[in-house]
Length: 78
Image 1 (cartoon, rainbow, N blue to C red):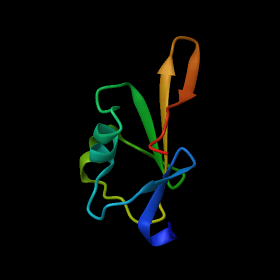
Image 2 (tube, helix red, strand yellow):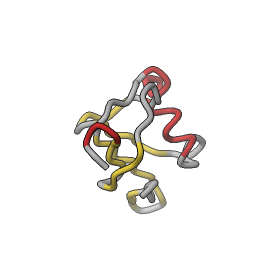
Image 3 (cartoon, rainbow, N blue to C red):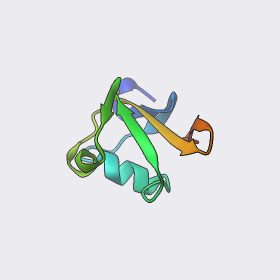
Image 4 (cartoon, rainbow, N blue to C red):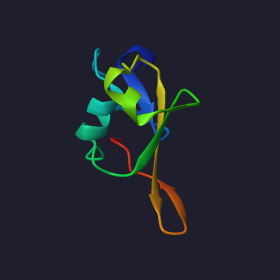
């Protein structure tokens, strides 16, 4: 898999499809209804920006979920 064909989700490479938004990625991974924070290329995204933020090849996405007493990284597509 070359850099042009994937993004990284929580450090793992994932197949990339041009035109996908952050909201679509979360839904595909099963996290659309969960309390999560999304970081894209070291910038935290506001939830209202997820549907209009497109992903580009090579992007780095971190998805962090919250539980009582702390937080954790969610599983990836890898």
